[in-house]
Length: 160
View 1 (cartoon, rainbow, N blue to C red):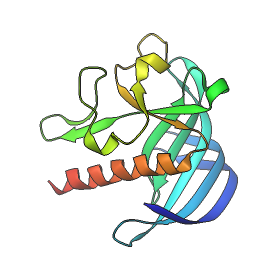
View 2 (tube, helix red, strand yellow; view 1 turned 180 degrees about the vertical axis):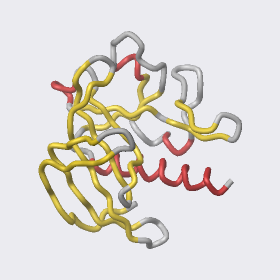
View 3 (cartoon, rainbow, N blue to C red; view 1 turned 60 degrees about the horizontal axis):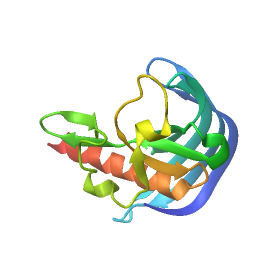
């Protein structure tokens, strides 16, 4: 996915999830093209939400108004600005599942990302033993690339 231009920047963007509505303090909308030349709208919303027993920064990336990936602030977000997203894989046997840290290999589409074990970045009881993408909150390119991988995997899964 290649960003062409910024379409809009807003404050106080609301998104209605199936069970509730969530407000994002800041929202950036881009126009992008995929590798086949198709044009897409990409939105990135920035808000707060309780994750692993703490109120953390939350980032959601939408492609064509469909949420594709979520990131949340690492324990040291205040110092690093780093957000994390659990890596998910798809297979016919288990469907969508998180990739278990350190037991499973990192799926090939994610090997070019900065990856770490989620329990190394979040020290709370009940944190998933998962591999996670690590991105700086200002690194929209990385977050968009991860969202595009998720979108293509879901698309491939739905064709099977």
